[in-house]
Length: 261
Image: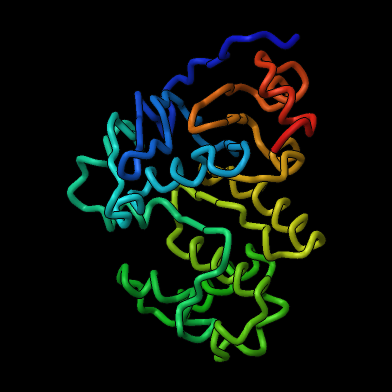
């Protein structure tokens, strides 16, 4: 039954938490007083129309929001109970939180070095271990079979969809505990997208995945929990089946049934 209020289940010991978080870009609010918990080892879906604050939420988790000079963050963003804005080593945080943005940003390196770059920076130099890790990450990104014979080719020479999957492989090379995906399938064909979705369902055994998507059915297929945002506000959050089949808020119902978006 659709009601007018907000339904927010309490998450015990969340892997990621937001406590009264408000984010602004100059005078323009991007998130308004968000309180939210994301469970460990689940896929957490975030849906909502454009400019509702979804990408801003992701950027707060690993503090890439810091790169936006006009941004202001109030409230607490927690990873494993620690306020990320009080951490001294932000680079360690970004190793723990992998991020894939909507459009690929390839490093001007070979396919192999794109994936090996972060592990090398973290101190992994054994060639055998690097080879195994590069292959594993490329397989997880459903890219290995297409590039295994051209690992020394520049990553920027790959097609757009391949570059996006290379970005995913690079994010996985950090061996993150959290993987944030912002419209990861926007440049990838539907068949490959479905293969990656199968991989994500396996990966959640080892990490927490936060999935921002404009494809509501993708969230319906993958997410254990789903949050709906609109106009910089959290409207509703809960088990995915409940959010889609028995939403508490009329706005949620209108969005998941295609009434707007």
